[in-house]
Every structure is written in C-alpha cells, then in structure tokens.
Image (cartoon, rainbow, N blue to C red; front, side, top):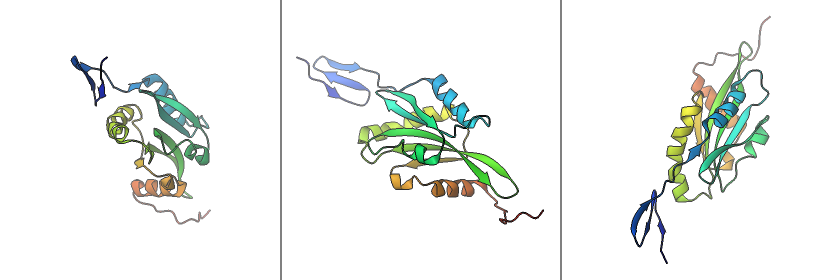
Length: 165
C-alpha cells in the first residue's frame, strides 16, 4: 500500500517523487466571452463572477445589480469578479470597471497562496479595469466603497452637483 503526502506540485510516495500537475485550468474563450458581455454598452449585464470548480476556473454567474453580485461571494470560496459601475458627474457619465479577487475568510492557507498565480492568469484575459481590489471580508462588499475607489483612481473630480442650462 502506497502512502501519499500532498505537496505543492508533487506527491511523494514510497517509490519517490511523482510529479502531478496542480495547474489551474482556464477556458479562456468562456472567460473572455463573459468579460466582453460586461464591457459591452449594448448589454445590460454589469457583472460576472468566476469561481473554482476543482482545478478549473469557470464563469459561475453573471447578471445585473450590485446586490446580486455581492450575493455570489461566500466565506469558504475563492473567486474573481468583474463589475461595471456608472461614474461621473452632471456633465459627464461614463462606465468604469473593477477587477475583484475574493478570498473568503474560511479559505485555507494553500488555496490562499495559489490565488496570486491564478490572479495573474485571469488578468491576462480581463485586462481592462480602472481599479483592482482584493477582498477578504464581506463587510468590504459595499457599493459606496467601490465607488470611492473608482473616484480616487479617476484623478480630478470637478463636478459641482448642479448643471447650468
């Protein structure tokens, strides 16, 4: 009977090291299609969430509305989110995008450590965003916090709140 001890990228058994790939699988076309749906002005979709299924990252949900977006993230999960928010003032309205890395507080150490390499892979596909956030508490999932981060990233903010016609 063989004894196995799990390690980062290999299993060691009584016969010596045996390499086993633990690389994350990403379906780039599925991820990109959902990303482009959020970016499209013609689409009502304003968010997408990507989650882990075994060793794969998949598009788990997409939709409209911040509350539905927030409901997708659970304490025992790792996930990525891409969100479109309306920004601007009385003179100019524009869409801004956030890339979110979620590591729930109940996620183990090894899965937490793996997120940095998986995030790099996701950012190759989800390349356009104004703000990147890493969240580890559901208390951070507030639309006002996200909007504040977008305002800070946007630079000058000249709006007065009143438009003279």
